[in-house]
Image (cartoon, rainbow, N blue to C red):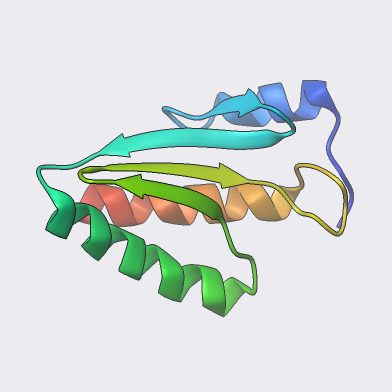
Length: 95
């Protein structure tokens, strides 16, 4: 997968809410009612990530989940990161 340029990343960020380009990743912070809801979403995301063979860097503190996506093999953000970000958005929407 080809690493996207900063302009390509910025253009694609217009198609997903709540994500930003930060430290060579696309990043979002999600907030939930409590730890159980946050962990439940993380579990759902984990199944999608495994199916895509593309795994996020993430951090969970109580009801908050910080997700950072980049493609390490490409050395930056690729289309694969945006595909996973869109899947994450779908999961969060239906939760």
